[in-house]
Image (tube, rainbow, N blue to C red):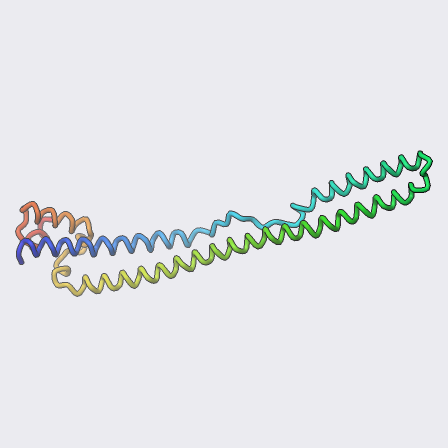
Length: 187
């Protein structure tokens, strides 16, 4: 084998092994990402989170109307005092019902955002699984391709790395080795 062929072979092995190592590293990173629990930045919300201000608002309005009722009781319109008192409680309860409806709607909207975030997290996990399957098939094809090469079988197992092939290529280019078999003894 000539020097140029040896350099080309070392270069080819370096690229193939670098691609193989990259795929294995990506699979490892994907497995680490899948082993961690999904991070969802959106939280589930309860209705009460939005409802408590309505309680304060209803109590404030009720108290103000009751104060108005007391004013009516001491004035010449005392006949309206009972009506205003009943109206205070009716308005307070109506405000609470409106608050329940609005709070449920807001909580539902927030919880839908949570469900969307949860779906996105599960989709990301499924994408990582699909990517791992793709990478594993790529690794198998690269190993089959490399294993079918007679010169690859000559490389010792501990030297089957892209860094060793880069070193072999440099030795060949610098003239410190004459061919591929010579460089295998020197790396």
